[in-house]
Image 1: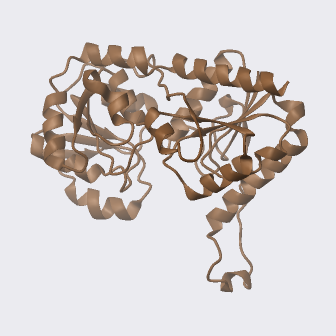
Image 2: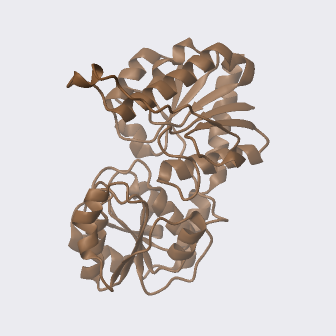
Length: 353
C-alpha cells in the first residue's frame, strides 16, 4: 500500500533517537518498507533519508514587534509546529488521494486529526500519550473519519471516555535488541526529564547496593542539573546520549534495567528493549508497565516508593535471562505490531474504496 506516515515536527527520526516515539516511528517505517509498502515519512528536518523522508517545513517563526506585545501570544515553537502541520494537511487535502491509500498519523499534534474530515484518504491515528485537551478537542471535529489505535490496553482505557481505540502494541526489533551476557551494574535509559524520574532510579539503586549507568537525551537541562548531576559519582555514571547499537550493548551487559516513571507510561519502550536483551526490568507499576513487563519479564514496585523499587531491583536481578528474552520475543516483537497495522490499513483502505 501507499502509506503516508506522519511523525513529529520537533525531533528528527534518526539515531540517536530523542525518545521512544522517534525510535518506534523509525522501526515501524523500516518494517513497512521491508514488507514492500511504499512509505512516505513526513518528519522533522534531519530525519534519516533511508526511511523515505519528506521533511516537514518547520520555518523559523519570528513574530512582529506588535505581536510580541500580546502577553497571550503562543510560544514561537507552538507556532512553528502549527504551521508545519497546517501546511502538510493542506497539501494532503489537495493531492493526498493521488499519492496515498492511507494516512497514518503517528504524531502527537492535533491538526492532522482536526482536519481529517477534509481528506479524501482514510486516516489512522495512533494514541501514544495519556489524554490531552488539544487532541480531545480535535477528536470532536473528526467524528468517525479517523480510526484510532492505542499502543497498550492501558492507553485505550485512558482514552475510552473520548474514543474507542483498537489496541496495537508497540514492538521492538528483537534481532537488533539481542541477548546480552548481563553484568554487575543496573541501567536506566530514556529521556532525562522529571516524568521519567531518573533521580528516583539512582536512589533505588543506592538502596539496593548496585551501581547504575544512565543513558539518554538531556531534554530538560535544568532538571538534570538540579536533580541528577549532584547524584553522579563513582557508583552512578551518565554515559550520554547513545545510539541504539550502543544502548543495546549497554543494556545487554547490565544486571537489571530500572524504569522509574512518575507518570502513567502509555507503553514503556525502554522496558521492552531491555527484556529483548534478556535484561530483567524493575519498574514502578504505572501505566502499561504491568501489561508489558508481567511476572516473567521483571518485578513491579509501588509507584513512587523508592524502597519498593530497590526491592524490585534485587528481585528482578534473580530472574532467568533466557525466560526474560523469550517473553520479549513472544509478546513484544515487531511482527505483531506490523501485522496489526496492516490489518487496519487494509480495512480502512477497503472501506474507502
